[in-house]
Every structure is written in C-alpha cells, then in structure tokens.
Image (cartoon, rainbow, N blue to C red):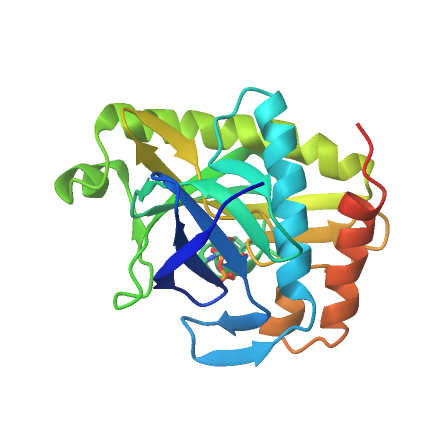
Amino acid sequence: MNVETREKLYEGKAKIVYATDQPGVIIQYFKDDATAFNALKRGTIVGKGVVNNRMSAALFERLARAGVPTHYLGTLSDREMLCRRLQIIKIEAIVRNIVAGSLAKRTGLEEGTPIKAPVVELYYKSDPLGDPMLNDDHVRMLKLATPAELAWIKRMALKINGVLRPHLKKRGLLLVDFKLEFGRSGKKLYLGDEISPDTCRLWDVTTREKLDKDRFRRDLGGIEEAYQEVYRRLVGEQRA
Ligand code: UDP
C-alpha cells in the first residue's frame, strides 16, 4: 500500500497513531509497552505489538465478513495497521461470557462462573477518572453518545461476541470477556481500536490456562509465551 506516514497524532499506552498523506486515513503503530491498573504498573511484553497488530487484523477481517463495520483498512507491516480515522466515542463497551476480573470483585461470584446470557457493561473512557462504570442515563447526561448510537453500540457489541466466541472456540480459546471502542466517521459508526490479548480475556478451552494480559496484571509469568500461543492459534494457522 502506498501511504506516507505524517505527524504523530496521539501516543497512548500501547499504540501510537500517525496521520498519513491520505485524508481520513491513519496508521496505528503497536508497541510492546504494557500498562495495568490505570498505568500504575508498567512493563514490556516482547513481541506483543506484532501479536496485537496481526491478531486485530485477522479478527477485524472476520468481523467485516460478518457485516460489522470496522476501522480496519489494511496491514502495512508487523506493527502498523492502516485505519479509517474515527472520532472516538468516550465509552468502553465490555462484553462478558464468564465471570472474571472486576465483575468477580463487584458481585462476589467466583472467577470462572459461566454467564447464561452475555453481559454488556459501559465505562467512561477517562484516564484521570480511572474509567468509572456508566449506565445509559450517565451516557445521556454526559452527551457521550446519542440514545440511537448507544443502542447501536450495545447491539453491535453482542453481534461481535456472537461472531468472535465461536471463531475463538474453534481455535481452542474461551472468550471470557473483552473491551470494544467505537467511533464516528461522517454519519456512520465503526468499531475501532484493537482486539488482542491486551483487551480480551482468553482461556485455553481445556486447561483454562490464562492466555492474555492477566498474566502481566497478576505476575503469573510466561507472558510472552502466552501471547505467542494466541498468535499461533489465530494468525499462524489462519483458516477460513
Ligand atoms: N479491559 C481493557 N481496557 C480497560 C479495562 C478493561 O481492555 O481499560 C478489558 C480487560 O482486558 C478484560 C475486560 O476488558 O478483558 C474486562 O475487564 P475488567 O472490567 O474485569 O477489569 P480488570 O480486571 O481488567 O481491571
């Protein structure tokens, strides 16, 4: 693809976003830097950027085939993804199939408890506030999204879960929970950001071994190996 990188637009915890010579088109550059607990814990996961870039590309392509509009336009290199430029909606939508993390803490349910119908949660994407949970009324009060946009986001989050869950299961991965971000371009909404072991909880189907960022958050060791294993299952042996 013939695209020139221009100025840095934004540098986040795990990615850098660059403008390009094409209007409305940006490059996401995936770093190996890892943070957790609102950046209180910092580290490096060697090779993570490549895994997250390639895995996100594979899953965005799968979702596009299922009719989910995504910002993905193409892969430029191991760490660079070409994307449609979005005005990001400041909501993190989390979908849960199995109790883990903050849901276990909040409810007292044991981690690993199956959830009959997936749970969708909304969080305010705000580093200074530490991403607090929101309900629909808060979204309206803060004017983060219109009611129609919010309804679309929730519907799309469940649709994405319906596509990714069986896709990952076939490759030996349980999709425990994951985080999505959406954005506007013109009058349309698109799925943005990334879908990776940084933003999903993935457990081995048989052993229930954690193959995601919880290995970093909880100092479980074998972090790089877990990311490489996910890569091997989802990208290394890409199947239709
Ligand atoms: N998550 C994320 N970014 C965040 C918060 C959560 O990608 O800022 C993902 C996380 O990796 C997990 C899911 O969303 O797959 C649910 O996270 P949870 O609410 O349990 O919070 P955590 O235990 O990660 O603090």
